[in-house]
Amino acid sequence: MNNRPRPFEFQKDVILDVEDFDGRALCSLEMGLGKTLISLGILRRQRIESFPAVVVCPASVKHFWEAEAIRMGIRPTVLEGQKVPKGRKLKPPRLTIINYDILRFWVPLLIKQGISTLILDETQYIANRATKRTRACTQLGRKAKHVLALSGTPLVNRPAELWPTLHIIRPDIYKSFWSYAQRYCRPRRTPWGWDYSGASNTDDLHRKLTRTGMVRRLKRDVLRDLPDKMRSVVPVPITDMKEYVMARDNFISWLKQRRADRVVTAQKAEQLTKIGYLLRLCAKLKLKSVVEWCNEFLDDSDEKLVIFAVHRKMIEALNRRVGGGKHVIVDGSVTGRMRKIAVDQFQRDPKTRVFIGNIKAAGVGITLTAASNVAFAELYWRPGDFTQAEDRCHRIGAESTVWAHYLVAHGTIEERLAQIIQEKQQVIRDVLDGDRVVEEDDLNVWDQLVREMNSRQTTLL
Image (cartoon, rainbow, N blue to C red; front, top):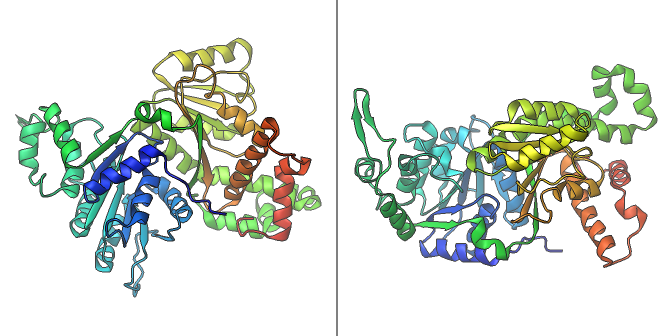
């Protein structure tokens, strides 16, 4: 069965627009409109000489790029760490994925291997001309035939931040920062040097960008093409794969080291108990990445975000570490009037951008239409609960598509669980819409995981 995603009409139009700019463009689409799919679609079409290609992205989305590339039929190589292996073969992979933080260590090898297309994801990461990551991207850009810069918010504060991206994409047009700054940054001479934090001639800059390589789409422009709800699985890295593998492959030994008092009980139903422990371990090991993803979402947009979790420790950690203004929390301890106050605050207060809820306590009976983005920080075994939680934002009164982001620990049982959940959500839809007869077995996520674990159907289990 072909699982390759099909682009929407507006995404096809964007691909054509980028090709009209000969593959050198700033693809500025609002979050959720499929910049990754569009970029991979451009590579696959090969209307331009696409490969070998290099994607540079934040570490938190590196494995999301990997998963999407595989879905598109492109087998990528993901680079890790600062140490470049000696004697590495010079034959390049078709697609290399690397994060900004380690790019400078790999630049000489990437250049030596050759590069046709450079894709810079979340290009606001190179807004500062002086950073090492910006200089590394500039080096790669000089060697690439095509450069595609991706960001919903390439300009966060001031026109000066756009210069590195524009210079990498079109060095023939944006040659000198000084001339660019004189025209668009309203420079001021201060006792400490030149200040480029101003803005001038912004209408002219917009026209020039549109003419020379910017492709822009907003959600409101393409709503007619989108379904009411869109789901995506976002693989995020974990902090200690060695511990996860030990727990997966030597569960009882691992448990003895941490909870010796639970070993006897665990041995009575080892596989069932093991699943629960592995999921809790995944939550702990991916917390850093989940926080990074949420903070990047809030930094890159002015939208609100609903975050659902399962365990209190996760909810408390998210409350402490996720930024973006004021928060409200609804878990099992928030009931009655306090629950209504929290929901009303999120719905009405523009400064309250984050709602953190327990998937059981906050997944029903409330309306959160002030947000159109839902992130699941932990996975739960009942697929219907996820659908109910998504529908807190997808209610009568919602004005846009709801995006549901499932943040799963890469290379773990969570990836398989996320697949099963989405399969079961389709089954539930079949039940409600009457498209086919559904057996009780079709809905039992936990039993399916146990069966797969006993038969070792996948290395994730």
